[in-house]
Image (cartoon, rainbow, N blue to C red; front, side, top):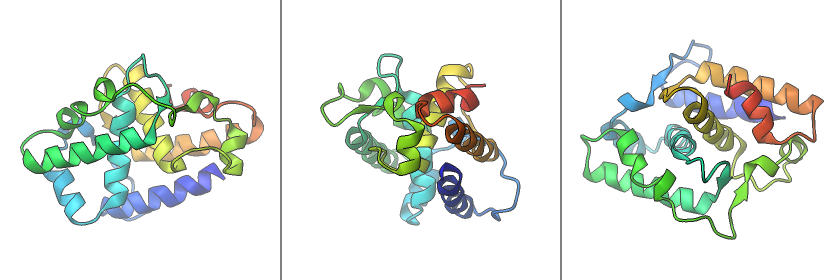
Length: 190
């Protein structure tokens, strides 16, 4: 179930990156992506790239205090603010732009927020959770684990992401009561 949803997500993203779906995807350095790239993708209507990148940034900028608590509506507002800022400041890097509106800049979470740590594998596999979208949620978790565990790396490796999603799927099938965060940490925090 998780693997199938991620396969569809990655297919859209790989087409978005103008790579053949079967081609080996090279890691992307998020710190090297400028607002001009984001502006061009937004103008082209490339939602797969935009959503993946901004969700990864959302997780990457999450603070220790916020942990795995997400309020998708506030994060969506931060995405819109990042896009607007990039439109006005095309020579700024996406990491700098997104940091202005994500992480510490997001207001305290409200009643619509929830902790990804309480979403279980069963919830994900039965689609009964309040996840915005599984691909976007796992991309957020990939950014989160990268920031928390990889010594400030800014690399997004889609090939590794696909492998990790498959491992998470297998782990979740064998451990349905485990939280999605626990499952993702097992493979994304290595």
